[in-house]
Amino acid sequence: MIINKDTLVMDIVNEDQSTAEFFMSIGMHCIGCAASAYETVDQACAVHGIDTDKVVNALNDYFASKK
Image (cartoon, rainbow, N blue to C red; front, side, top):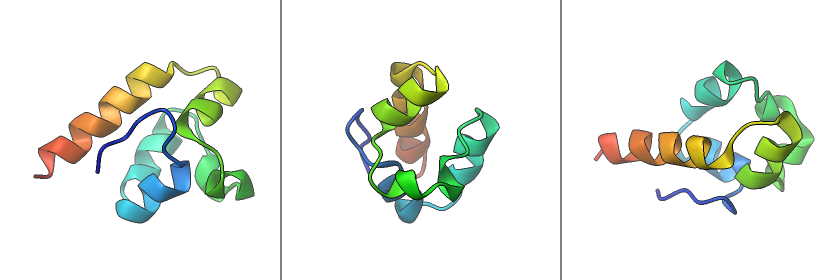
């Protein structure tokens, strides 16, 4: 899976449930929020004051390492 700023948070978690731990570890408790079903990574990062590019890069690095 390739992540970009417009990828839905829930799509990422549905692809690999261990990413829920990543989101939780950076203070994004989106997983338990109904908004995660339609909230993009960029929107979630904006709400939580987290750098979108860092999150996208970390997630892409994670998914690349799984190949």
